[in-house]
Length: 117
Image (cartoon, rainbow, N blue to C red; front, side):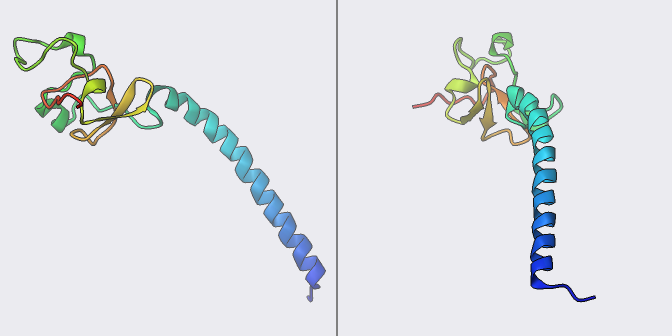
């Protein structure tokens, strides 16, 4: 079965157009689902409560709930957003150089707090 160059190009163009449409349709659905996750944490997960590193350094997602007696280095007003180890990902969430398992809340705190210069 011989095909001409013209037939080959037409079929190739058809396959290409189909793949672009199929991919973009899937992409739109995936993007809308991703957008919902992005609201919370830029598509990444929050640090799990059972994370060993987070537990070891006393990470809490809300600095207002830090037990000051158990954490004598804590001072009111300290939180992840003002820490040198924190890099903002989106509104309310970011990455911590100490905790690699997920994103930390910008209002969180841990014993590794180091004020930004």
